[in-house]
Length: 266
Image (tube, rainbow, N blue to C red):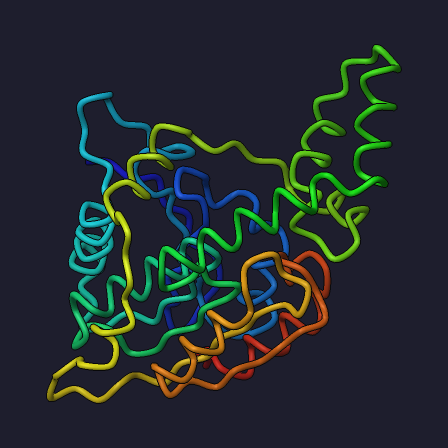
């Protein structure tokens, strides 16, 4: 398995886990790079298997266990005793799954707009996102684009992700990306009707829970209740920002300050 990686900055290493599943690290840029250029640390991005510049043959397994194993292999390749993980959206859930499998290997967890720790929270998100995409103002914009007869892929992308934002006009500042549907479907199917709360409650390890931060937007279609519950289970600091699902786009400076104050630095 060959994974595309990109490293930026100098100082303590933070591994950044993008969302999806099946997306790539590109849509975290350029904003996430500010955590390196301003913060005295290095960021290691990688495109997870089956997404972005880490494509796989059709017969390659794509479940959550494979994604956790890839992250563990990445740790070994970089000869790191422990990882500081910064996970966004699905990447936040991946960080939690990695922690449950390898609690002694996690030094610090920063979870930004993390996917819910139960399948029920995911269903709530899907319902809320679908509702938002039917909002009259978004429908008008989509109808206008179709009526114009102009092929505008960038505008079509913005309207396809509009429901993630508090103000859908902010979608213009999100770097465009694609999700590999097969990867996305395979990962969620591998999780089934999951509920990680019992494992988080019952985790037994000589290693204490790592310092953790959970950041979530007040207007995120992903249920904020799920992140509050996750923060309590991890004994994490919880920060609520007045944004939707993309704080790095919607409130860049506040996002950087919040993460910069938690992640290790020189």
